Length: 161
Image (cartoon, rainbow, N blue to C red; front, side, top):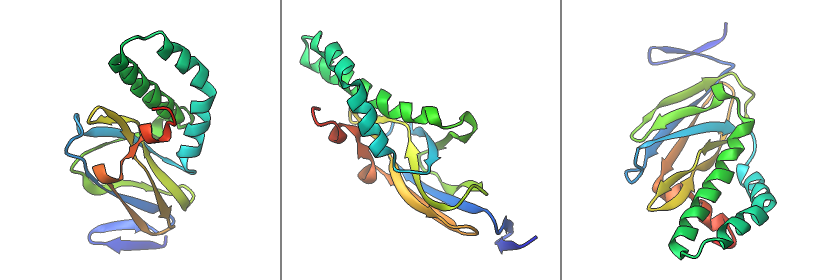
């Protein structure tokens, strides 16, 4: 077996590893579910959002209170984003807590371009998620850093928000 030793840990050469640095102090609770996607999920999100737009607009048009409309729209955006996870097997959805700076994943899944994708969370009453590209290299380790600065505001992907 061809292996590489890092400290006291023996890593299989055919696996790739992911180290996560997660610092989001405004996130409450400071945990988020994530999965590794083989493609950029933003394109699929935009298509799904367009597909359900008529139903969403009808629901919003019945509300008189602008604050309530904004709240419902945030919920709609988060719901559409989280539906992307339906294509992910349950045992491939993980949980990470803020303050984490450790190895969170080691796998012999095919290497290549990947996206670290989280479910939607709220930061400052806005729907956010992370969709961070990285390269998984066989026998190597990638690092993904999640901060509030690189969180993706789902409202910015909504042309009418």
